[in-house]
Length: 581
Image 1 (tube, helix red, strand yellow):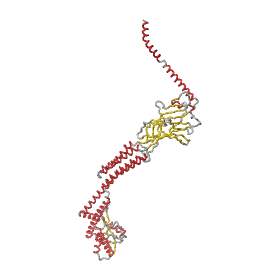
Image 2 (image 1 turned 90 degrees about the horizontal axis):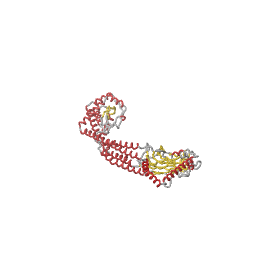
Image 3 (image 1 turned 135 degrees about the vertical axis):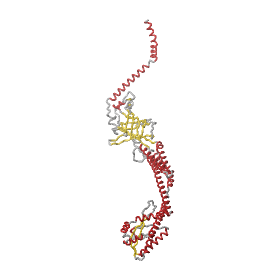
């Protein structure tokens, strides 16, 4: 029984052992090759470890290569993976790059292997140049998942040091042609402490590669990458002469965004403000609201555009356009203000002219106006005013240009008292009590008493001269003589004196029926003459002023405003596109 169990087990194990034997017999050298590779890698790693230990033995990282000899030449290459942004507000740009430095250190020469690829821990054990970016604002070294740095050492001692970083560098910009501007952003590379006699930088361009490689997939929202330029130069500071490398990146601004978001809307707003020229000039709410809305919208456009730009003092290209659009919309509001003013002034003049013509054509209203003037005259002739004028004008001269109606009063009075050799009389002068400030005068006159004593012969000669002058003027003009009070002051009246008897005679004459009748006729004539004179003055001024009508301004504006704006467009785009090109 025991033998049967053992026999059964052997039967099951035989195929397994036979399969293993077959595999080993088919690939007899496979294990040998793996073993040989393993031993070789073990020998190489042991050799590299020995090489590194040997390289670092007696190595002083504090001293540069070729110390006290020729300067170390450091070659620079840059691979631009992406340009993240170009900020106009902060005047800087951000990009992701692979930054590589190459130099030769004879102390790191070795043999036995083609090259040594070492991690970033080796950086703390060998000398590396103190390279920095002179115009950077912030630099970030990537550490996911480890520090993105490595070192390669060739047998001849040439060292390649590569790192990945994100650099934010300053980029001074000129916005005079904005948004048709070209921007130039620099990247300045130099040594922080070593001068020209210690380190010399250069762009390390290979046979088939350039020192700078830009990814073709770079896309920016407003700018478009154009080209780059590499410069090697020496830069002098207070501590000495330094070697510096400069990489210039050139960008061209894309105009599509600004055309669709700023230029076209602002142009349509200006055209919208012209709609008011076709609206009725009496539609004040519509025209005013339309003008103010377009002006406020243009202010919003200007504010939103400058909010995305730095606070600069000079004028940008887009400012010229927006300010011109603002003044065009503002001018449309001013145009309506002129139209409204001229329209209302013309209507007001027409109403006043119609009212005054109605007064001339209606005798009852003209008589009422004469009575009103007479009542105002009597009301203003107070005794204290008469005494005041008498005392004030005691030394004055008599006016030679007395009204014809007043001369008739005095003639009649002299004929009734012809027995006197000398006669005292009253000279009355009419002066206006009110004046319409719009240039159309309806004058209400009052009498100013003056006292004088003159010879009868002089008075008669004076009467004759005045009568001839007045009749000549009346015949020539066809109307009553005007008051020349404004042309002859009180200083031209003859000086004379008056007694209490003369004053009582004057008052007795003023209370006579003849004086009242002649005075009323004179006042009525003066009122009618003043009305006719005011209407004729208004008509002459109206003809002169109304050469420019409200409708004419609107008609001219419909042509002048679009023509001016079109001319501005031609000059603006020709000038800026020519400079930008």
